[in-house]
Amino acid sequence: MPSISALILSNVQSTPMKILAALLIAALSCQLAAQNAPREASSSVEKTVVAALSFQQDDLDSFKKAHDNFNSKGWDEFIKKMQGFLDPSGAPSFTSKLVPAGAAAITSQENGTITAKVPGTLTQTHDKSTTTYRLRVEIQTVGTPPRINHLEQITCSRASAANYCM
Image 1 (spheres, rainbow, N blue to C red):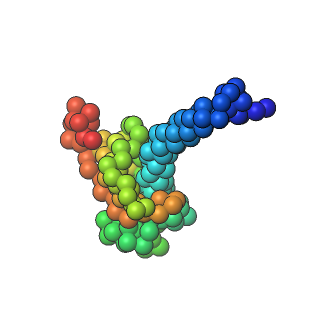
Image 2 (image 1 turned 30 degrees about the vertical axis):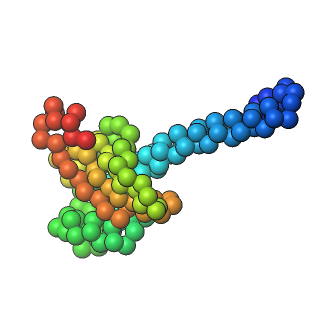
């Protein structure tokens, strides 16, 4: 089956019109690709944040999977914040699960570095006690696939503030 661009070009009679049609098709293709790039980056960053903040109490393997989403600088920073919440083997003393409340908002993207904000709810469980926070996660990633270079969790104080937490 011929492509749409081949059909368009075959129906254009003159060479200058064929060139113009080809340029138009190329421009539209570039525009569509440019529109998809931010959505793909947003989705990729969102998945990385969810994976990084989702792990199981007393399960070192799930915490190691979370580790895979960080570069060394980001992991060192994250581990400092986790001090007091890890058992002697390095496993978390609580379960954590992030559920995004919307798409990641890319605030900047250049030279392989993406800075974004991800709104959501973070549920943390320790034994039978559960706490859920409304928050936004501010994140900076580097590379492909994105690895977290910096992660900060900012809680929203009231339910009504969640709409303005971004």
